[in-house]
Length: 273
Image (cartoon, rainbow, N blue to C red; front, side):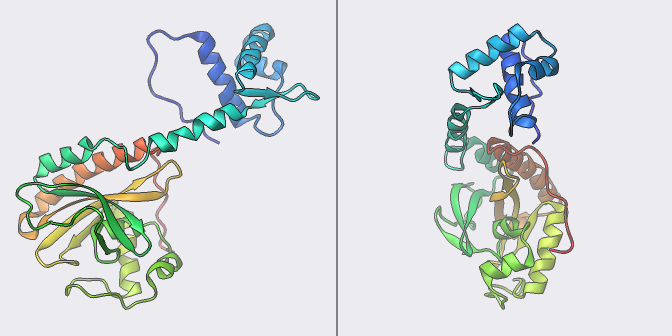
């Protein structure tokens, strides 16, 4: 278990609090099964036993730690679990900072969507419109096909062939335009490409004249839970503009991912998927 340490250094550190937090981190990493005693923690922390005992006693009194009455060793308490369970409720896709999407919209004057997978579709749960992007008129709550959209392909990009088939079947899939991926082989090749490059493009695959660029959003388990897209008229999406949009999308999706507890690691790509 890796500890997610902050890069921030406090200006006015409270050493006792710092050591108390270090106690809990050590117990989470090394003593989560049998627990650890005062002497062992004293050695790990390089502080006196009496100080360690006072820290442990205080944390135990607040139920952050518990002591085994036979071994006298300490382990993490249920109070930490209760507090930890609040985090997903506070940090979910329904109370994020909409300013992240608004900034994208302002930068590129195109429609920005946030979508999640629901069964075999991608559902838009948040949207910011640009005045110039009248063509991208998808409404919040609308469902689109996974295989024919940038957000849908981004949401599937980590999936194995078996997982895709379980959701979409073996095909052929609905053909919306002459550019739609309708077969499992061509779709899987597209998903491998997306995993490698880190973004997906729907270049008139769902609707003529509409181009979308999307990137996935990951959570604390490193799982893709959402996708963000920038969409607009194909005539406006030049190569240089797409390159610019990719930079903005990367910043936005990373911010959303960090908000959901992502630690900055992307799974290694695999050609076997």
